[in-house]
Image 1 (cartoon, rainbow, N blue to C red):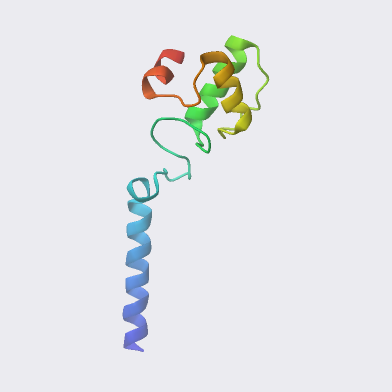
Image 2: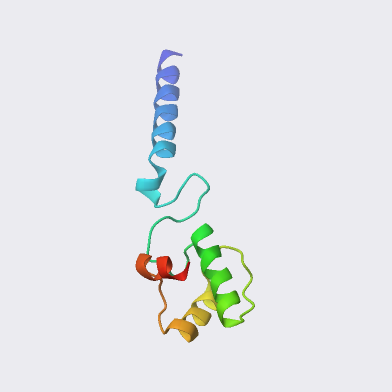
Length: 95
């Protein structure tokens, strides 16, 4: 029984470490959203929603604002800015 108890504690400790350092390990925050730049195909989160809203408002597009950087977001971005990724600098200039 003592061995099982030790293994249980070890598993809980590892799980807590993974949750605590999720950002550094997986590149995601506690909501499972991607962090960091560049924003690109597959990125998710609030920053992508801001980008999608900007593209809709400034260029009259009708992207679904779902926070998922997919093929449609990439296509509209490329048509509008000639790029397929959004750097931190470009993102800050959107606001």
